[in-house]
Image 1 (cartoon, helix red, strand yellow):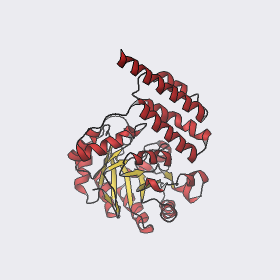
Image 2 (cartoon, helix red, strand yellow):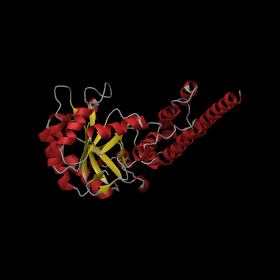
Image 3 (cartoon, rainbow, N blue to C red):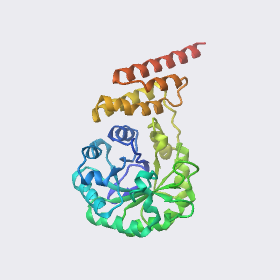
Image 4 (cartoon, helix red, strand yellow):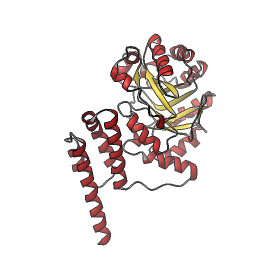
Length: 332
């Protein structure tokens, strides 16, 4: 079973930290579908150090989400250590994760995120400084390398382990690939064989069968699911069940999808406020609708919704139409 430091998970299925997505409303919804561990979206170390109100709001964790890993990013040792110490003492997170994978230029320009991948020595220095400053287990989420010419995944993972890191999550793509191309599972296997700490594999896990194959082919301790869970927390539930029993559970009905979408909406409203939540929920609602026949028009209309009432009405009417069509085709 996946164990990070003294934190034990019920299963090896992990929700990836996705920026702009993994707030408490989304994480709790995914947690209820059985994820062993959920990861919060990355938070700026400087934002924490300067006590930025918006940043501090991102540190909110509902007790029902636990165990939870809270991710921070930064490029300077002093601010990273200060931020980690604050998270350690002032939040109910179980694990502190350091982002070494974000490929976005505004992050890498600050010597943060994937920029670390070019220097195993910096990784050792930064991670050991954080480990020394906190009581919670420290982990690292990284990519396999900066580009095809600079793939130091094994050296970087060893540096994390030497520094006292308790686990490493590895995305099998380079920074240059962003989210394109194919994830390299061979490098994930190589890293797993090179370190003694738990390794969580990430990249191209789109079905429960993919998750099982990754665990078997690479030997990793955990499997991280990101984009496949967008609008689809059933992916988490179906993966957990498939790994436990070998049974492939059915895909959800349109009604089930919309019901969970509206639950997610209400949690987001409670977390932020109606105006912000409805705007943020537009992309999520479009993801929930994926795979439901005839969703194109509704997906367009979602972007015009300004209030909870409008969004609920639009989705409820749509699902009713879908059910009526299904009933008619069965009767016919």
